[in-house]
Image (spheres, rainbow, N blue to C red):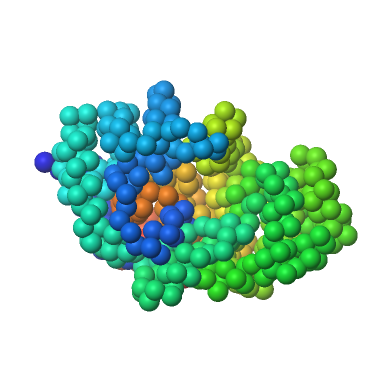
Length: 468
């Protein structure tokens, strides 16, 4: 018995399936470049065993626990911590049983494919997970996690990861990255500069965060000039710990290009906590342009993750805080929103700005035409909800005819669930090879070119886009 079909995601027409399989065979063993994600660097710094199967597969994975919550399972019953430190489930076996009993909820979803890939190809399990097999699964995975081969660094190497980027806030001391570097381990784990807490006036504790930014950089963040210098200092600090990119998770793609006097006045209002919602959005937009200018100086790739209506459930946000599975896609404008920044720096060939969206309607209408014209722009892969076979297929079909392959940035897994990394890259490689096989079969791409493109989509484009 096998949990995974060896020809999954390939076309059903025999000649196209054979071609897709050949393309996939040429890229399936390429090293994994994971240039954007949310794994915990502490795992690799301390290299301790993962605590238990629930902590590995359920508690950190938004895709998993949001589906369970949608069917009435409480986050507290899944061990997700409360903001007030209140009581949550602490028995990992109980969490695992709830997960296993509800495995049918994931049928035909990307999560099921990622999970089954991990169960079979990482842990050697071939029977489906269910209520009946829950205890066997738990005992088997837990025993494996006690083995040296299943420590974080060993898994990193067995997964074939060439480089993995984590994401840390601007105020993070990056202690775990330093510990990794000082340990002599040769695995490459780099950080990413995520300054949301000090560029978003609506972020809780914004003024205090800005003051803290000044303390740790020695810059006067009570002034606009000092505030910008503090960002430059932190970006340099992150670069010293391997960063090649910054990341910005804004509700909109709005940018601005205010005069320095106007920006300084707006910053004063933001620090004082007197910004209106419109002014807060304008400030975030100004900071995207400022970060793009800084990228021209220090070379960091600028990622804009726009269009997520984050923490949509006020109840979940109050009880459990940010990033608990309630980020929801929303309509997003890019053409008008990005114009101020693009007027300022868009024609700079030495700048790389990667655009992500949760609004699929803009792929063909806005994003592909923009990336197909401006030398600074590249399209990030389908993200959060759309990093699936269907999502990747729709993305390729909507964008390739306008911006080609080489104005895109390859694939990234954007995950907190470590064992899903090879599974997610496998889905992306299979999906792209299926699309390329169709292009060859319909006379739009030569077969030799398809093999070259498959390699670039699987490996090279991400390296190039992120300076890795």
